Image (cartoon, rainbow, N blue to C red; front, top):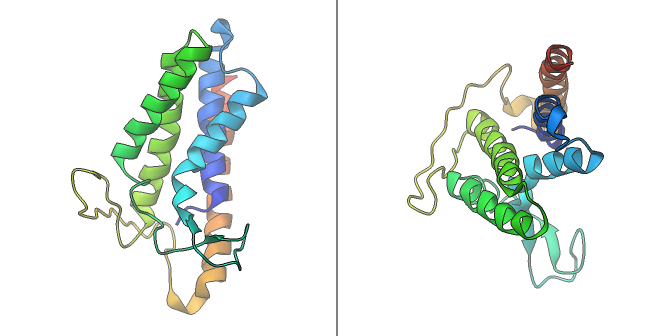
Length: 178
């Protein structure tokens, strides 16, 4: 399970590549573009938030966190396409480079879905809404989950793995792109 740290680092890597490639065109140079990449790299996890009639919500009354719907329709290629279309329509209203923003948002969401496909054992509905069949490419890389380590231990180990692996990738990308 990629943690929020892993998805955030992926957004930073995407921003670094785009920023350096598009330097001459002065697009995607600001901290707002970095924030855009980080938000869209984490966007599919919005399904972790659930609405209920309970007044004992974790975030707000009636709003909590739930594993029930996690890794559902927002973790699909259909959601990637939907995100791209919505971003392109909104960007078209405000900016000239609407295709670029659509591409960046789609790339960020796709990377999230791809990372989760490699880790989530129950699989993802990649072709939702056309199919609800779950597809998994679980590699267990590098350590995988063991019930003995417990959930918290798993999250901590996952975050450390992601920090090392994605941090090294970010350093290499930064070095190559400068």
